[in-house]
Amino acid sequence: MAALIDAIDIKRKMFFEFENAPYYCLDVEVSTPTARGGQTLVRLKMRNLLTRAVFDKTFKASDKFKEPDLETVEASYLYSDGDGSYFLDQVSFDTISLSPEKLGDALDFLLEGAIIQIEKYNGDPIGLQLPGQVELTVTYAEPGVRGDTASGAVTKPAKLETGLEIRVPFFIKEGEKVKVYTETREFAGRA
Image 1: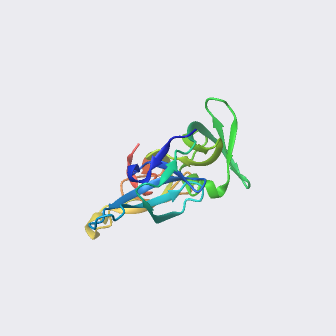
Image 2: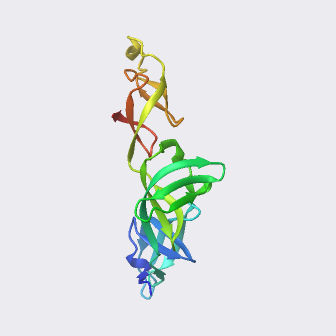
Image 3: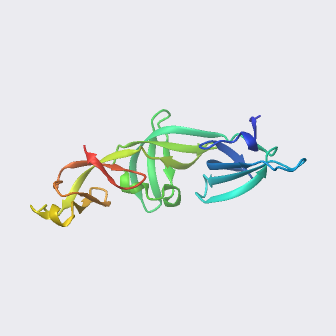
């Protein structure tokens, strides 16, 4: 049987199960009453890992949650089609498919062969974790013109090999590899 976790013991970045769904804790706020006999309440900002919805909910300190049956497996990206995207489990060599809803905008950062982490709940794939940064090649960037920096325009739009468009410094040229933060979709540096 899975271990039970008290609501008061839930901390940021913890996983727990509520109403038969896995959740990730984004923030915790504990309010202790000043009156005698008052009940300590725990307000959780949490993300449903199945629907990706984020909301706040208040629980009694003594409420109990199950530990979710979560597993993370390493997989490499194979390809995408109209039905979804396909990955190869690096341990069992099974093909794992994720629907576009579970993938979100991750395709903007995925190249064939890229190694990522796939999250499974009760053995079923529910989503993926991208690395903090990815390296992508610039396929189109306007040429940087000398003197552009005087107007404060030190960045220009660039299109990357996955179709993602970001702003890069004016000295970046077509064909260069750049690092991109996956969370903010911003330029992180030359690769």
